[in-house]
Amino acid sequence: AHNDIRGLTERLDVMRWGHAMIRPTPGFIWGTDRRLAAAPFRGIHFAGADLSGIPIFEEALHHGTRNATVRNTPTGRGLFAHAAAAAGDAILELDGEVLASPSVYSVQVGEQEHLHPHRDALANDDTERSRWRFLNHSCDPNCWMDGRTLRARRAIAAGDQLTFVYNCTEWSMDVPFDCACGACDGSQVRGYAHLDAEARARRDAHAAPYLRARAMHGHA
Image (tube, rainbow, N blue to C red; front, side, top):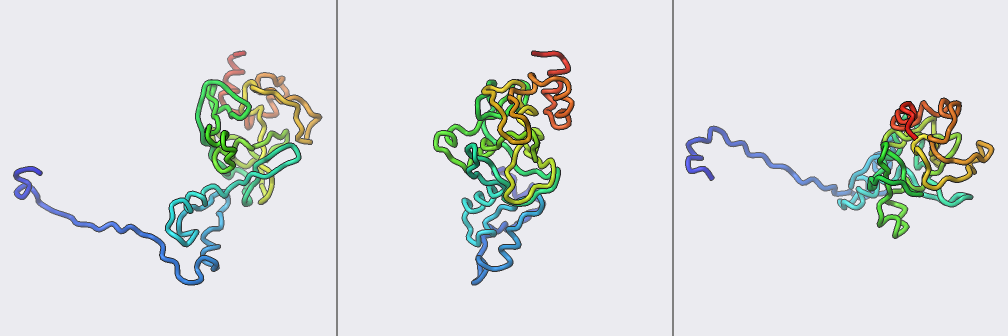
């Protein structure tokens, strides 16, 4: 400390910061108060140890993953809404590793940026981490990508499968495929670069800005 600290000190404020931890009372865990506190508000899902009634960080972290769940579908697996959402609500934030090249699991988030699922999640088939990789394509989607945020395009009910248009984020698909969404004639999904002017016009309201800018400048 400074040699003259006593003479230089004019004021000393002492505060005590508590380390708050929940101490549940009998009936709390299965009671109405906890269920009401855990209920989502539109697209907002609350996370906290208080929601479990026990002061464990891992429990709080788990609550933050309840907004969508992975389930089996006729064509594999998909991501389904845990709770209802209104148009414009944020449903999911995409996490992972950004690389310069795409893969079958990646989502393009910039002109030369492709978001990949966490490698250990893929290796271990972890459906809790990077669960966005289970989002399926649809030509009549109920969601769209706003940067790295998945948003509802229209009202979504709890239990609805969450889908978006791959052509609205990908310039050119690493692995093109024939659509099986049931809302089209089975056209091939290849990416924004392969859409004609009419198809682009139908999608431009939710197409990523980097796709529109690249098309405007005539880049291949």
